[in-house]
Image (cartoon, rainbow, N blue to C red; front, side, top):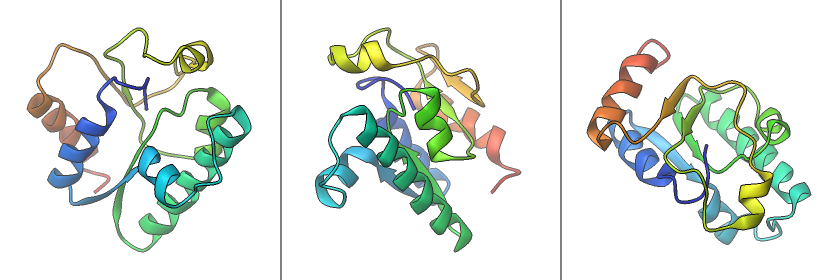
Length: 134
């Protein structure tokens, strides 16, 4: 999770290759599958619920899953459900003012990604922390 433009998708694509995971990107899901959803707050809650339900279904079938989306508030994070949370925190503001105003810094996360590491270092750091889950 993190603001638009923080690097969530870049990280998710690379990490999904490394841990053999299915990568669920919210923008792709919204454009191709859940075309009924917009960026209104109620739709963001629905997106989180749907992403969480789909992730849970795939995990229950034995897959590793990375859900890649903004998930801007504590309520949307609760709607997604239990997860290993990676906060991509590389930027203070995105190009979307509405999302900037809506976004709440998370009260809980397992890993916070900042600008200090390379993509390869980030992926290796995450793999070290989740090896026992996989």
